[in-house]
Amino acid sequence: MTGSQHAVILVYSTSHALRAERLLQQAGIGSKLIPVPRHVRSDCGVCVRIERADQEAALQALEAAGVEIEGVHRI
Amino acid sequence: MTQIVDARGLPCPQPVIMTRHALRESDKVTTIVDNETTRHNVTRMAERAGCVVRAEEKEDGIYLHITKGEIPQEGVAPQPAAAPVGGLLVLLVPSEFMGRGEHTELGRILIRGFFHTLGEVEPLPNTVIFFNSGVKLVVEGSPVVEDLQTLHDRGVEILACGTCLGYYDLKEKAAVGEVSNMYTIAETMLRAGKVISL
Image 1: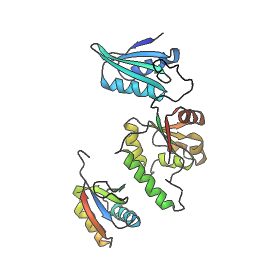
Image 2: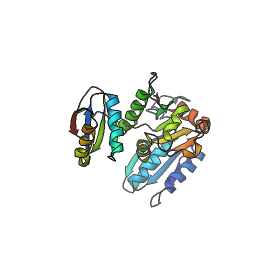
Image 3: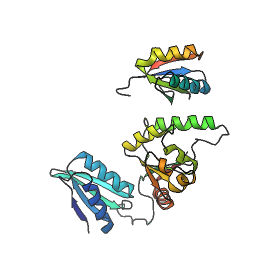
Image 4: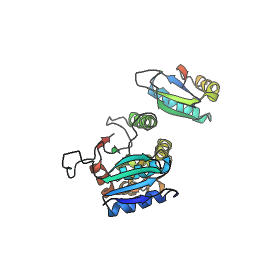
């Protein structure tokens, strides 16, 4: 994606992804639930896309709420 | 008798309107344009109306040869009522969920994923038709309304059934696309080259 300033946070289940989305929304961090991009992982799953600039804040918010992160990837 | 529409130098939306009028009177229209945006808009309008468009780039302009119905093959008589060659790609959304499992949460995740992905894969559908509970997706605040807006901006026609919007009392809340009716929806499906239902 040209011009993309995004990163995706991978979690361990779809319900974790929904929970993460809600937590980020409450923390005022913009996010979008999207299918995991093919170049990151080929088996289907959903992840949470955020602006790269929000990565620190997002990871902190999720850690504080006890949401386990599988990884973060720039896209 | 081919009708000629000289749309060179005319601002949008005149070329599209003039071409549409000409197509009401004649099965063959040649619209001459002088820029890519107009070429794209006229072509898209004609293809959505079930026509075939052949572009010829000449020194003094781009000649868009528009024919109603499908291209007659060399030496083969045109088939009446056959689908246009290639044809329009139509996507049906008969529910606010994707798939028929009993867990609406999964259906919601899937439909959100689908409309996000449509922005990244090809080809784009020509038209997306929402009916039954699918109309909830075109309403302000729906989880896919932004993606639908993006698709709309890229030239995808978005139609939502008026009866269904009325049933859910959402007619005033449609945020993207056009409110349509059974005639247009049925025609669009019947004239399509390919119809995909979620």
